[in-house]
Image (cartoon, rainbow, N blue to C red; front, side):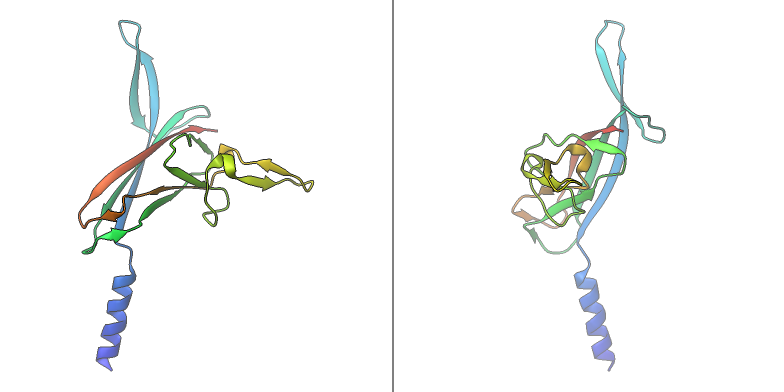
Length: 149
């Protein structure tokens, strides 16, 4: 009986994702330097206001002991922000991650029975496809800009 329990526990441990994800968010501040040039700095996103430009950084790492094939990084879009989805490698979802595509290919129903093209405010999740094989210990980061609504 003990072997069955251990086997189950091993199966549960093996089913846990090997990809570790950490997300950081910063506010991009623009000031003018002494020469009149724009200077961009990143500040903590503890206090944000409508219209602020945010930088969202997703750090990823394969913490598993095996290479991962056909991996994708999927992150929810925080409420109240409009992501810049101009990166051609970025796929979006407007329905919580059930369906994916480029924003210009997604249509949504309207209350009166018609359809409309999805806009950045409709995006609920963002996904990036990683290289074909992600070796153990390999890490990287992805980022996107967004505007606080």
